Image 1 (cartoon, rainbow, N blue to C red):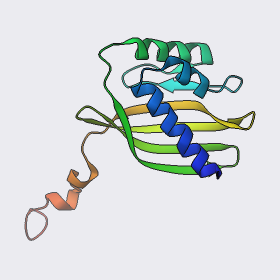
Image 2 (cartoon, one colour):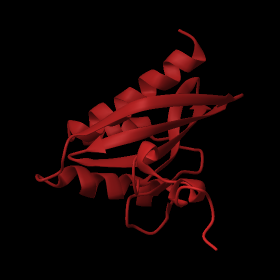
Image 3 (cartoon, helix red, strand yellow):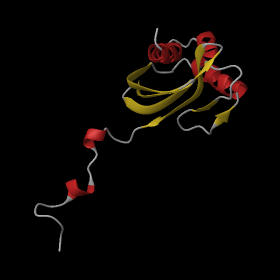
Image 4 (spheres, rainbow, N blue to C red):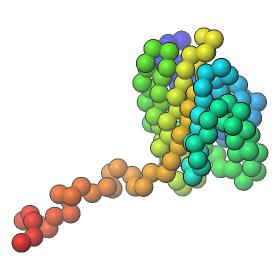
Length: 139
């Protein structure tokens, strides 16, 4: 398996653990010796494995938690680290997410996760020139 495929598999495992409320699987995905951090939507920055894993235990314990699906994953490799940028579909909402993976003991482990809401789909965002009246600038 190529590194790119292994990273995508680890990213899929993250979202499967998230949606399945599988805390033991989520715990195994996070690096155990490397520094880790996490920014849940609307939360402050969490540093350190204990704080991050504890937050996931709380998130996954919620019985009302929605299913989360990743789409449009893009992998950027930087030696023994990799970034996966993707969109998370949570109910009717779309979040932009960054998942940082690092190689630890030969396995790709999460070192950072951050997700936040997307204001509008890019196809619906107007540029300043799109807002000009026909014929150009107003006088």
